[in-house]
Every structure is written in C-alpha cells, then in structure tokens.
Length: 183
Ligand code: ATP
Ligand code: MG
Image (cartoon, rainbow, N blue to C red; front, side):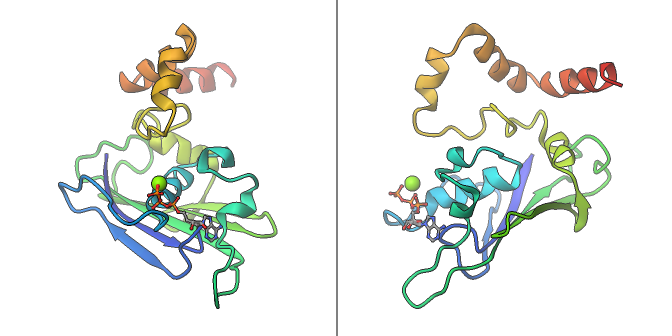
C-alpha cells in the first residue's frame, strides 16, 4: 500500500489546511522539536480508524482538535484525508477497482464524527476493512511508537501472534471468518 498524500485541517497543531505529499522514496519527516512531526503520524493513525485517543497522545477526543494559539481561535472541527495509491490493486474489497482511494475522517467539538471513502459516507468498519492486512490496523505493526519495541518483547505469546498474523496477511481472513460465523 502506497501513501500519496495527507491533508490535515484543524487536527492538533495544524490550523489551516496542510497538504503533505509522499513522493516515491520518501523516508523521513524532519523539523525542529515541537513543530508537529509526531502530529503527522497521529493524523495518519487517526484517519485509519484509531479509536484510542491515548494512542494519539491525547486524553479526550477534543484534544485532537486545534486548541488555538497566539492570535488564532480554537477550531470546531478536525478533518484528515489520506489518499492511497491503488494502481497495483493491493486494496482488496469493494474499492479494489479504484486506482486512488481517499479516506476522510472528521470530528466536531460536539462529539459528532464521521468517515468518508472517496467522498461517500462510510462506516468505521469499512475503513477497518480497507486497511486490514496493510499492517496499519488495531494492534498492527506499521506504526511503531516509543515503547512499542519493549511492548513486543514483553508481549504474551497470544499478543505476539497478532503482530505475526497481521504481517503474514492472515488477519483479514480471520475477520471474514468471524463475520461469516456471526451471520
Ligand atoms: P519532537 O521533535 O519533540 O518529537 P514533534 O515535531 O514530534 O516534536 P509534536 O509532538 O508533533 O512535535 O507537536 C507538538 C506540538 O503540537 C506542541 O506544540 C503542542 O502544543 C501542539 N499541539 C498538540 N495538540 C494540539 C491541539 N489540540 N491544538 C493546538 N496545538 C496542539
Ligand atoms: Mg515527536
């Protein structure tokens, strides 16, 4: 799965619309302390469906909405859009035919939130299905945060198995099996 671009508005320290493109060969994001590098990674995790705001270094969901800065009032909505290149058809499921897929997530201060796939309303489950097997889902390995390496070595065999199954692309089949069995 290739990331093409990330558009961030009102998420954490990003007030105006910020567009980050990932040309082939991108290997890093650099910048002074506190400039928002980790917030970019948080935005990526969030748009992919992360439900635990503590994993985004926040306490409540309001912490991920731009809180204001000198001369700039707080914002009422955070929005992140991630565009994925699917020329090679690695995304399985209903969106397989699209050469480009854009996933959008929004949250309002009122607590209301929604997801879109290619600008059409979607459910969290649709987003999770889209990213299954890509290593980016719940408990997956593509984003390794501080302390995660320790967590892997300290994990129980069952927990470690989840990482291995995601890496081996088995998770999506297990999820489908569970779905079928529950119908
Ligand atoms: P380091 O090099 O130290 O790891 P970094 O570039 O990763 O820094 P981040 O942690 O991404 O920096 O950004 C931290 C900044 O984001 C802080 O200045 C913090 O005040 C700001 N920030 C976080 N949440 C919000 C929010 N909701 N509204 C406004 N600013 C926020
Ligand atoms: Mg950081």
